[in-house]
Image (tube, rainbow, N blue to C red):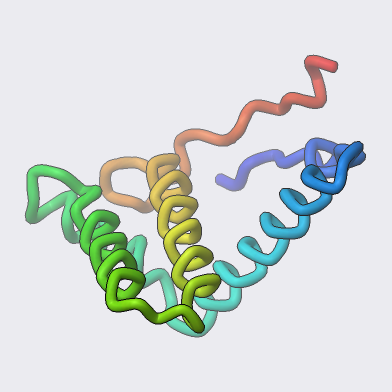
Length: 119
């Protein structure tokens, strides 16, 4: 079952340069996540599903990915700083998305609230 997403939720008119930057970054991040998911398959989601069966905490893959990103940052790769930040943000987003699925990772059980109905 897919979420009944109301696109108006995403059509908030930014009022400041910072809000424009937020929307721009989120659009870039979403595009990157979809591209990587198509290229590599549901690798993060599959790791998380396996971890849910094999480990006490299904978030362990997230922590391992974040540890690797932090290690890269600490190794002082200034050219990679923006990519490291985007990858880290992407993993947090993927974790939040995966948490909307059931324990087996197959059925979508939760979606964002339709905030447009409250305005």
